[in-house]
Every structure is written in C-alpha cells, then in structure tokens.
Length: 131
Image (cartoon, rainbow, N blue to C red; front, side):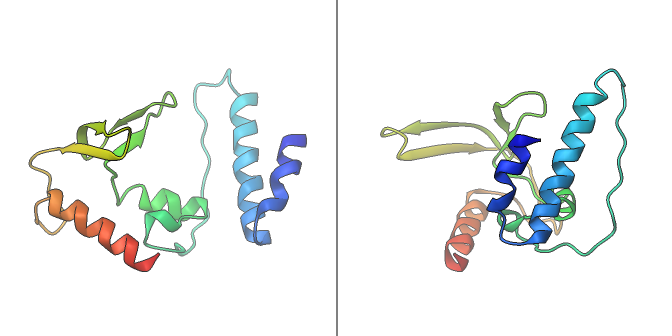
C-alpha cells in the first residue's frame, strides 16, 4: 500500500484517484486469490466519458471502448509483448524514424467499408487535428 499511497497524488481530481484505488484493490484481490481459478467482478452502469480511445481515463469507458476499437497492435494478455492487431506485422527503418505496417486483409468496418491504409492515415490526421 505504500506504493499506492505514493502515487495517488498525481491525479487531477478525486474521481481519478477513486478509479486508481479501485484498480489497485482489484489487483490486490487477484494476487491474494491466486489459488482460485475464477475471479468475478462487476462494473457499475454509467455513461462512458469519451468515444476516443486515446482519452480513456476510467475503467468503464475502457471496458466499453475495448469492444469497439482495435488498434494496429495490442498488448499480449499473457505477457508484456506487443502482438498484431489490425496490422499483421510491422518493421522499422531509418533508426526507428520510419515504420511500415502490413495491414490485415478483408477487414471491414461495422458499416461495410473496407479497412485499408487510407483509413489509418485518416485516423492519424483526425487525431492530429484535435490535439
């Protein structure tokens, strides 16, 4: 708990601090109940705070948007490695200044439009415009 207390003051408001404590409590429960095979927990019903995955600050919004968006890459569920998402593979050039992503084929958005390089470029342009 010393670790938690040390970092709890970095949040802008009490809501973020409560979310931090909730996540910390869940992590403690997971470690304390390691001998159990199943951990169940519920989330309260509330409105999500954003529709943009880069603005997620709370657990409920993150849980909802995780079922809507998929990135080019994702974190492994079993380790700290990065795994393919919408990109099948990737490589870098020029000392990490240029990245090449090889996109999955035959992927469509919910409205039937194809996912392609233009989609990725438009997403980056949109993100740059609002930030």
